[in-house]
Amino acid sequence: MLDFRLQVFYTVAKRLNFTKASAELYISQPAVTKHIKELEAAYKTTLFERSGNKKIVLTTAGEILLQYTDQLLSIYRELEFDMNLLVKQHTGVLRLGASTTVAQYVISPVLALFHKKFKDIQVQLITGNTGEIEQALLNKEIEVGIIEGISRNPQISYEEYLKDELVLVSAVNNPTLKKDIIKPEELKNYPLLMREPGSGTLEVIAHALKPHHIKLADLQIEMQLGSTESIKSYLLHSNCLAFLSVHSILKALKKNELRIIDVKGLSIDRPFHFTRLHGQPSSLAELFIRFARNYKPN
Image 1 (cartoon, one colour):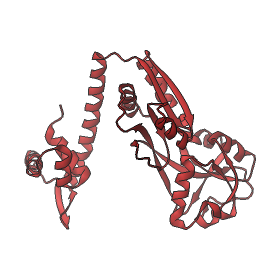
Image 2 (spheres, rainbow, N blue to C red):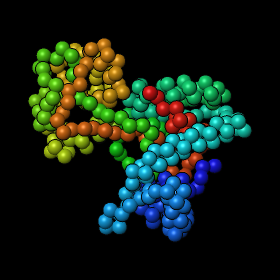
Image 3 (cartoon, rainbow, N blue to C red):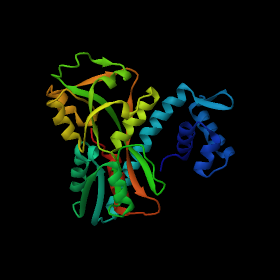
Image 4 (cartoon, rainbow, N blue to C red):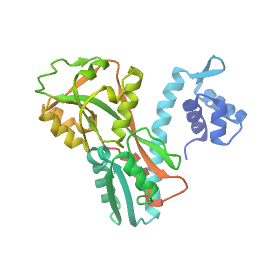
């Protein structure tokens, strides 16, 4: 087992708050302080310092220890996972849902590796937009979903899986846009392709444009299409622009079919999330989530 003092340090370092760390670890605040002081004595250095207003920050030594503790925790998670596999037999059907972008560009390599390791588990994958996957979860048609977007349903738990970025893209030969950088307000001057209502991508774009005082209704939306692949194909035969996941355009960039247009001051980062119903534990769903975390796609 990992030295508990390191677990205490890791929790304090992530929360930067002794009180929150003690509550999360179910130990007293003096116990948290004791473990930190023992580590500082062992390494003969200070790990945290006060920054005013009772706030704490990591010292340089603390930053270094956090990096190593992060690696150690990851190794221990993998060790625990693989040791558990030796004593458990996993069979059955895993009903999995994935939003369109995740299904097409992210999860397939993970599913292939999962099948190699767990040949007795049958995976049934359904795809749809974020709203459809959440509804399938609520209808108990699936045990676990992987979605994009920022919606939050109180009946569903959300666990971050992977980071993603939406970028503005155009066909390389688009004659209406020669420059590589535009201002956010210039988005109104070009025809755009968007995903359909209910799409997590559409939801994230609308949210990202709000600080720039731009609504979807202000844009020249030429068409709303139901998949990233249809948008990519449309782009190649039009003068439109579109926001797409960077995961989805890597091959098109290499083939010099599409190019990225920078939008000054606009960065659209979003996470993909595992989703499950509260209070609906599933051993196969838990197994898949743990596997996917350890075998993230490149």
